[in-house]
Length: 423
Image (cartoon, rainbow, N blue to C red; front, top):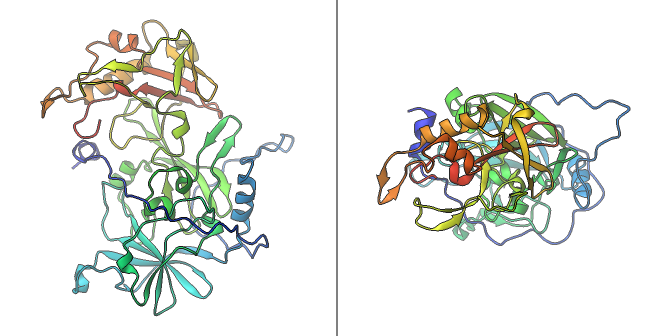
């Protein structure tokens, strides 16, 4: 089965509910302990700016102290590349060890205990690959399941069944890690900000938001097909160093011919990858992200698809289902675009010139071609624009220039392809 066929067949990812549990309000001790050495292999950082350039501060406000603790943790953890260890049998749902669905990897130590990631044994297409089920601290006889890895008191914790709280298997909400507490916002360059703390910003969290997925762990090597599905089949660029972690951008060819998909993530000190899943770039998209200078509302549609009048969010110009964080036009002719609106973050938004341009036409052809010309359960899944001219008249595709000079291509969500269960 190809990646594209999986995208159409698989239902949208199910959110795992998060508890209201949060770390203790006390901040970590200000006296730093020695910083552990990173061991995960990642792409080389981009070149440093000119020595004559004014240094750029990637964080501000309360995040300055967060970054300082990332660089010199006070909470005692020491990380290393994952090393597979014997199956501890803590999460087996069967008396037969052959049926155990988990593998165990030591990823660090703290206070004489092993820090162990418990990982699913199979690649899960619905949630994005090899998913960490839990992280525990193990002293050789008893396990503490870590609920609240962030040292920021307001961040969310993970939710596990209380029946794990049996002798030798305790739920622990008091252990936190400075080196996994990330700034709420990072600016790789002036004018471009990413929201880098999923536990602080998402309404729900799952283990991958806290610990990162295990797709890059040794012995869990993903196939080229799986990496392409994850959006990691192309190039990796380090956008910023966050202590022992790195904020990175993955790029590969987009579903729209000639464009590039960009996905963001944080690579942890032990090689787990915390995926953005559009949360890092969320401030640039969604309801109300773009307004037009002439005041016309083009984002509300009498929609046969749902039977309701509703406003659709601004989205990356990509096929529905498992899309990227952003779609970029790395080769663009600005003369083929005209300023026509304003982004909620303050920068200009551009529409194609009269008659369109090659990028706009490629977006239209992709969305129209990927839509289902059918009716299922009474839902009309045919593409809403019969012609390219109608697509342009609806102001369906537009662009803005990112702070680093890259051009972002976005669409009115109404103009994305129609896919049953995943539109």
